[in-house]
Length: 109
Length: 115
Image (cartoon, rainbow over all chains, first blue to last red; front, side):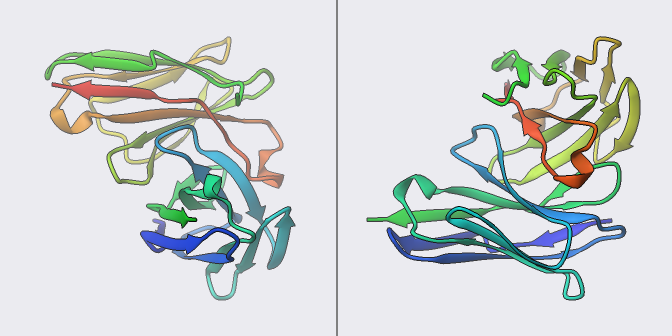
């Protein structure tokens, strides 16, 4: 089976940098994705790491270490609109995604 | 707008009843996934279909069933409903090459309330 661990809540101020960690245990691993969800809305895709290293997309970056079964999402220049839940998700064959329980990010002025 | 359409958006029903949730994937996407999200919980994978065939099954209860039709839309049937089935049910779709990008496109969800 699969299990993922990520912090339940992170707080930060506008303009700051925050890192959300994710550790996983899985049988069969193809990659790690990150999704953002605002207030029960549709989860939206942020990034994907299939190989070790850093992927950068604007203010967001994601990192993967397959040997450590570890990844993180880095959010820079935080804005109020970044307040949301962030989910890491493991890909394990046939594009099946297993999600973590999510990290609620609260950005304050 | 992801291009994935789910109906109904909201549904209130009683224990013991049966409901059907419907999902239309994005044009060209062959895979459909169903996820359940309960209050303060992550997204629990239920089932995946690819071009009409069941591809993977997660923690789906025996009271729940799903299918994908020839036009690729999918339906999730929930029967003998219990209070604990109250949740957001999301459908997602992915293109044939999603293994390279890891991206699923989620609908807005169907919020089921069982009273």
